[in-house]
Amino acid sequence: MSRIPRWMAGASNAVTRPAVTHRFLAGVEGVWHLPADQPFVLVANHSSFADHLVLDAVLEALRDTRTSYLTKAEAFVHPVRGRWTHGMGGIPVDRDRPGKELLAAVDGVFAGSGALVVYPEGTRGTGWPLLPFKDGAFRFAVRAGVPVIPVAMWGAQHVLPKGANLPRRAKVRVVFGPALPDDTALSRPQRVKALVEAAREALEPLVETARTAPGPARIRQASLELVRRAETVTETMLSRTDTLPAGRRVRQARLLLTLARRTDPDRFARPDDPVAADARVLAARLTGLRALDAPAVLRPAVLRGVRRGAEEVLRKHPDHLMARYLLGRWHLLMPRALGGRREEALEHLRHAARLGAHDTRYPMAYAEALLAVGRDGEAAGQLRDVLAAPAPDVRTAERRRRAEARYQQLAGAGAGPTTPRG
Image (cartoon, rainbow, N blue to C red; front, side, top):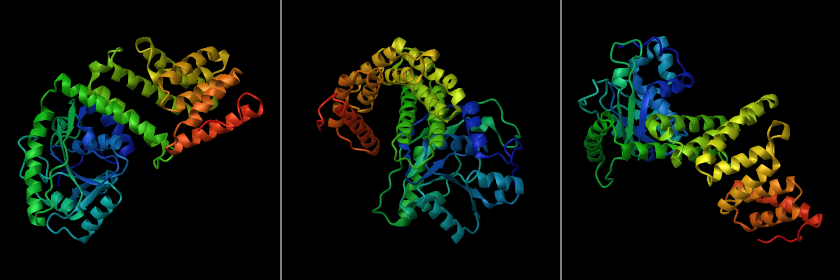
C-alpha cells in the first residue's frame, strides 16, 4: 500500500487549499463548464497524490457544495492516512466487492448537489499516456442521471511523483472540458460504454491542452472567466438570499482572483487592462467587507486599502463604475480627520449614479451623500428615481424600502411631494 507523504498527513482542507493554490497552480481554464451548485461526476486523469489537493483547492473556489472522492478502501486502514483521506472527502471503495454502502454514500453526494471526483484510470499513472479506463464513474452517473465533466491536470506528477515524501518545485495547469454527451435513448449498459469512450476521447486532448504552453488568447479567456466568476460570487454573497457564510464567499472570491493572477500574470501587470482593473476593484471591495468584521479601532487602517485600490484604477479608468462607487462610499464613511471629504463623496457618487442609473444602488448612494450635506431637495429627486425602478429581488426591495422611509421623512419636512412616483 502506498504511503501518504508526511507533509500531507493530518492536514485539513482549510490549511492545504490556500497553500496549494499559491504554491503550485499555474493556471485554470474552462471554469464556465462547472455548475456552481448542481451535482455531477468529475472524471480526471491521475498521476499524483497532489491531484487531490489541486482539485480540492480549485473546486473550493468554484463550487458551493462539498466535493467527494472515490478512494480505495486501503487508504482508510492506516489511522493517519485514513483521517486525512476522510477529511478530503474520501469515500471508501472495495474494488473487488463494491457494496450498498458505496451506493448510499454516492447517492448522498448527489442528493446534496455535490461533485463526485473519480479517476477512471483507477490508480496513479505517469501522466501520459493515460491508462485504460474503468467504468465505475460512468455507472454512477447513468444511475443518478447526472452529467459527467472531464478535467485534465498536468504538472502534479512533477510536484509529487510516486514515492516522494516532499513536494517539488513545479506548476500545475488545470483544464475543464464540457459535459460529455449522453444519449438517454440507449440502454443503460450502452450508455455506460458510450460515456467511457467519450471520456477518453475528451480527456486525451484535454491532457494535451494542459501540458502545452497556452497562447495569449487562451490565457486571456481563462483569466476573464475567473474574474467574472469572482464577481458573481461576491454579488451572490450580497444578495440577501445566499445560504453560505459570508466568510466562505470572501475566501472563494479571493481564491478566484488569485487563480486569475496565476493564470495571466501579464494582464495583471498592466494598469490599463480593463479586466485587471475590475479585479483590482473587486479586491478593494473584499477588503472593505473584511473591514466590517475588524475591530472598530482597526477599521480605518483596513479601509485605506479600499481607497488606494479605487484611486489606482480611476487614474487609468476614470469612468469605472464600481471604483467611483467605492471611493464615494469611503469618503462618506470616513471622518474628515482620517481623510474623508464630503465634497469628494458627492462627486464620485454623482458620477456613479450617472454611469449606473440602471442599478438603484448608485442613485441610492448618491441620495445618501446629498442628505449628509443637507441638499434634501436633490436627494428627494434621487430617491424618487429609486422608488420608480423595478425591485425584482430581495436586495433591491430592501433598498426600495429604505428609500421610501427616507423619502417620507423628507416629505414630512417639506423637501418633496408626499406621494413618490412609481
